[in-house]
Amino acid sequence: MKKFIVIFLMFVAVSVNAQWQKMFQVYATIYEFTGNSNYVFCATGPTGVFRSSDSGLTWDTVNSGLVNKNVKAITAQGIYIFAATDSGLFRSTNNGDNWSSITNYRKLVYHLACNDQFIFAGTILGIYRSSDHGITWDSINNGLPRQLYGLPAYISAISISTNYIYTGISSWGIPQIYKTSNYGNNWYPITNSGTDSTEVYSLESRDSIILCGTGSGVYISRNSGINWRKIPEVNPNIGLFGLSIINDQNIIVAPYGTGVHVSTNGGLNWVFKNEGINPGEYNSCALYSTGNFTFLGTRPFEYYLPAVFRRNTSQLIPVIDDNTLVPKDTKLFQNYPNPFNNQTRIKFAIPRSSEVRISVFDILGKERDVILDGIYQAGKYEVNYSPKELSSGIYFYRLEVNGEITKTRKLILKK
Image 1 (cartoon, rainbow, N blue to C red):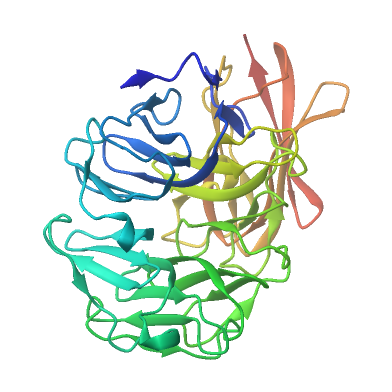
Image 2: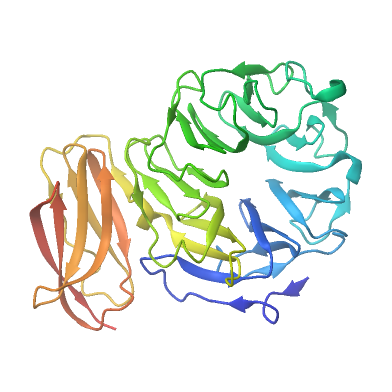
């Protein structure tokens, strides 16, 4: 295991500022993230697997036994980590410290997903399932279409939700998304999704919500695939997408070429959250939210190295502090702690779905920072604020709802 210091540029963030922070950059494509209770893993090609034990601040290379370092997919089932390479599928039984081969190159795996019971592997010749941590595999293609000469379908994406498993296939002219309710014993086509004649690149699902990234844009379903809507705000031209569903209302999409889009009302409206990144410099393609953080991975673009970025998820989507009761009035609470040195918490409440903006002004009335700006459902929220550019002094933070100033409070920064 090599410490990730010499070859790559390391950026260690001392505090979480209100923007994307570059953790490291590398001569490789950032394909995918995964994690378990102790680590976050990053699959890259051709530089292998990286692992972080401190929520992405520092990263180690963990490639011992990995004979092929072009890792295109990765998933974690407890301490068992699975990495899909151009030489087949590899498994680690100790959180990535060592790897061993469990399938050969003839069964090339490009997509992986798992739950507590099974691991699913999507290949160029169908989908496979293992119930013993990857020791043995069964072909589970009943109901999926066939390629030329009767070969199993080319699997282009897999995602697991509460009641269903979804898979995308690469085959023109027939339904592109299939689902199963019995762990792959039988598959059924999802029709009228809008993806019937374009290739599926990525899938993400949670509960009844499905996000599908395709060659013509991103589609969303909120009822397990019965009805679909194309998201018009997301770039429709390139079909490589990072997708993350935080909960029923809060969704993040990172399209290839335009940065990060966030919705706080179930996908109806979207805002950019590109502070700290330039979409013209970094083409995003991998997205992963876990714990308090969201990770963004990019691909090569002109002269800019691919990189891993990190941001506190509460800066993208404020944490719902208490949504058991709908607030009667709009409120902006005093930040705590105040005065503060590094980070402070700000709470606000809104009685109905609204456009919300919280910004910071100096004593001369000049706007100096924007804490959040987006559409939020009725509820009480909390957001962490860590000013990056501000010096010590007295400032004011202001809540605007639907374009009208409603509340202003004072905060004191002491560095």
